[in-house]
Length: 198
Ligand SMILES: [Fe+2]
Ligand SMILES: [Fe+2]
Image (cartoon, rainbow, N blue to C red):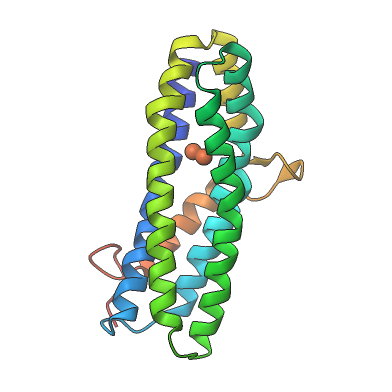
């Protein structure tokens, strides 16, 4: 595999995994709000933890620190899109913080919390879907046009390491993320995961 293929496949695979987890959260939250599913708080908190550790702490920051600046250095063509994507990264953590706050209220049986949680999860999932689609349509295709071999080597290296660019250290290694992903899939009820429906 060339460094370009490696970099593109890591970014795209991260998007696929993130969308799978965030969509599972949306479907579970919707069924819980509709009274079709008993809330499994261990699962719901696990998903929020995964989202916090993976897209919020690793995926988006690596795009901000490595992929986007390198693109800005090569071309000014998509600066407006990069500005917008960076703004979306900034807004993503507060949206996750609100999900955590509402999940806490839901666990305390506060009236209306289940419906609010389902609504916020749906908004969060829609936002991420659009965000990642824009990255793939505009950012990855422009990178394919303008990046040098060395750019791809550096992007591939940055994405292959699960180093937190903000904290300068490893959070969890790739095996941990894979295992934790499997743990989530095992808990998510059918048909979105392989867990039992309760
Ligand atoms: Fe992003
Ligand atoms: Fe991304």
